Length: 383
Ligand SMILES: *Cc1c(COP(=O)(O)O)cnc(C)c1O
Image (cartoon, rainbow, N blue to C red; front, side):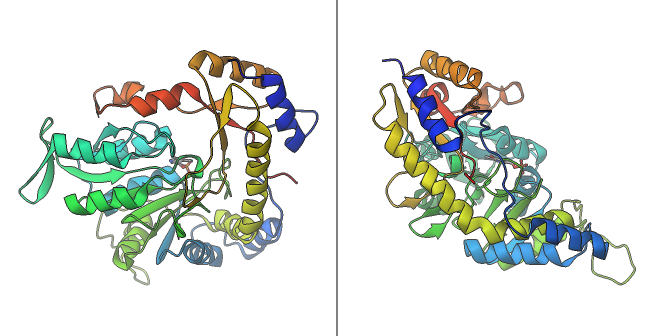
């Protein structure tokens, strides 16, 4: 049955405005953003030194319950550094989900490692623990103190699940499986600030996790990211490596490793502090939007509002609907975008992209099903 797209448009306009262009997700600046930015400029501390970086890190650590938070230039580079932190080396493999944004797999390539793709769950759009467990059991062996992929002969040195659109993956199960195998988990939590699984914030289950503060995320620093971990030592190493690995000294330029210039500038951190102050308000507003969509879209035929599974609290970063087929999805995208309502399909599976053509991929039934049907609908904070 065809989705009644005109009725969907009415529902979207009922929340986001009767006329004009409605973007998928626009940032909002409701608090101290200008004040803090001006303070940076007045103080001349706009770059790599200044009080806002420390404050932003403390705010995110406190909000998420992570022991350590290290601010970085963006989420993608944060993931690159996170993989290095857990010991991913040149030629290793990282198991991730095929259904994710390209940054997840790009970070694996930056580490000169190889992505391996497993399936997602239909009800989370995040890595399927069953798929991961089956892949490990069928394809991998423990040998010489590490996990080896029998087909490629390579070491599997990390597993990287992603919390799609803020919906927590079955992270407890994933971490449990990885503990059994002795493989560290890096959570790509770029989309899930404000999302919890059983009361615990996403990004605090694995060894290390990364949030993104890109312009389209729940809160933004213009560009930026945050590495979080409960492992104090790992957090200190993250800070060290993200700041050129310089050994503290009054004047000597001694660097004890290949470090990165991944530190978040004070200007961006100032924005981050102001945004964090408003995060509870932003989340509340987004929850109202999701609730409105759930109520008003549930009666319409031909599409389903994507609802969170039991036991989780989602940040409602991007709301999603599931159409009945790829044709229906394409029709829906065309009509809504032509009507000035920005909608976007979920990503093309990573294993279909040219730079991943050689990657090993497991059975991706659910990923393929979702790829054809999921569309994001406008989800900005409503002022
Ligand atoms: C946004 C995003 C990233 C990357 O974050 P940037 O800050 O834009 O580099 C990584 N992974 C996922 C799933 C994302 O959505």
